[in-house]
Amino acid sequence: MSDKVKYILYSVCDFGFTFGGTAAVIIYNYVSAENTLGFKISFTGIVLIVALLLTAKAAFEKSYRRKYDSLLQQLAEATREEDKSALSEEINKHKTKNYVYQRLMILLPFVILYAVCWLGAISLNQLKGCIGLILLSLSVGSVFNVVKKPVAERLSLAKIISK
Image (tube, rainbow, N blue to C red; front, side, top):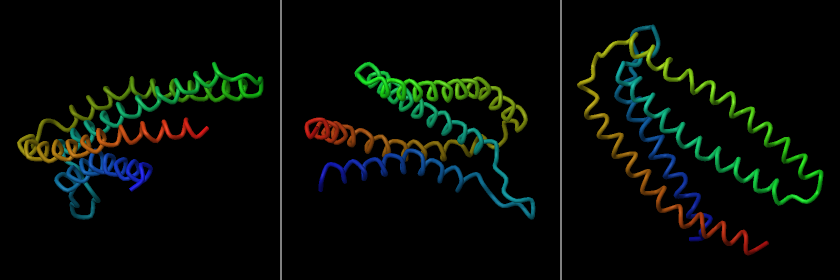
């Protein structure tokens, strides 16, 4: 199997187990249909979704920083004026997105606190078993994440060499 296929497979497994498995456990355990009111989610389900959002937030920030550093590196290496202006414009767009993101992250703890206060601390006993399943899913996702890193480096090196 080629490195590119391995990388794609590992990335899908990493994402699937890290976020998909965790979300599936939360939905299975905490989302239920109640009469004709639609779907309701319990307090512990909301706490777990918040934990999942914070995990996704950390992953997003890492990829954002990597893209920003890459754009700055490209700008430093650019020689043509058109390339420099295009890269500067893309960096400015990236900065604007970051500013919006930062403001939303300032609001996030207060939204979480409001939801927690509003819902109360009901049904926390169910949380123990669900956390175990989530940790198992995240652990499997982490294994695939670690396995895909050397493959990604080989692909990156092969791309550089082919230029």
